Length: 628
Image (tube, rainbow, N blue to C red):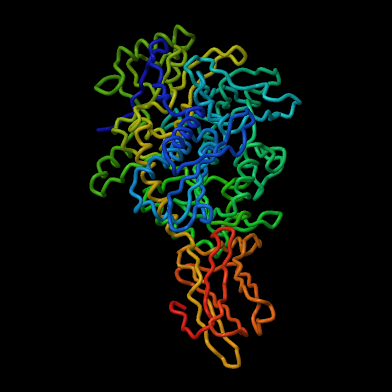
């Protein structure tokens, strides 16, 4: 039996619109109210305003910490940043929900994070762009609202898209223009727009524009929309001047500047986790050369193993391993790693779910059916077009100007291309539907997203292409991806995502450096001389600084200081700088020869901007030094 492609014909007047996504994601105002409510109800939560958006909305930072052995002000910190990308509402939701989730957990479980360290959360860096999700007409807005002359005509933001067909979305237009054509419809699924492949006899038939009209009369369509600057291209590391969306200069935006200022003013931040478009966790970066200015593009070679091991733990906890890698030039996470100098990670929190592969024996028949699939329709039979429908289509095509060549007959089996031509002449939208139950796997990412939309989200992710009489272009087709569909998961997935990210965050905090001074070893040498030895030990898993921080001299050193009068030091430096120390019990020894009376107290201080100050006192009396 030959499996055929079924053409689904639906008159435009009777076609249902795709289901509009739920609108109960929290607005920036609701995010701010949620922060205020947490502060009001929990003594362990405080919040400050670190800056304002272009539109004047506050950018707030939450601090969460429980009482512990170390005073809160002397602890190192974990920073979580979300909402840099205006379309990534999921990050803001999870970042705010983290607080409630952590506070509902037992103190024993959260101790590695909230008692040994403290947590900073900046839940929404780009509130102006986030607001666009809640507009009556949806169009993805990732950038902030700084006006920008995208088409370099001296006027800013003058040609944005419009919802021409009134479906509540600004999607795309397919414009039949052989001179400008760049794309054609994929024969396997005509909803997908592809570029012609060399040597495969493919010819482009249409050009793609954002839905709307040419507002400024320059012959271009919707090329200069609202805003703006992509905040994740506006930071210093890998910044590309004159690049689309990168901004007039580094940190040109109030939002990115507020974030950088906060980080630089809080040197106690020991690691950073970003929720946004970039991913350094499901697939860790490797070493990959340098840019023109000599700045490394990716991870330092000596940091690759650290990122690999954290990635393995992340995937184990979250099962998120299908994320796409976005270029991190000018991004906050790249700057935090390469120039601020701490282990910095980023995740999009969610990716398109992948269907489990069938076992070898289960797909053999499907494979045979797929091989046998032909680009023809029979005029009868279940699952195919009836003869009566074909007759009506043919008659309508003839009436519309199709010339019958004498050999054409309503009894013939037309090709798919002929049938599609008939339908277009009638103004009927066509969609090919696979008859194999959706089991055939697409070779393209767009096809995979369509399979996910069709099979798991009820087809709500894509607006079917429909003819539209454009006031300037004539007959076009309007359709494409529903805004935010590829960024936002179903709402019922948020709780599970938050729970997994909370677990990972505690795991990440438990691996931070734990640096201490050993108990000193004191040896009497005679004639009032004493040898004093002490070790600085890192009991944590993370090194005290990344390899990148060592290379660019960005690591802040530990200071080891012997607090005695200068004239009592016979050998050894009074102050030592320790630039980096690996984890897992690695230690660095320091030794002095002192002159002093027996039982005289000697103070040794270990100071770090990130990890606080620790002082031990030892008398000048013989001791082996215990753990040293």
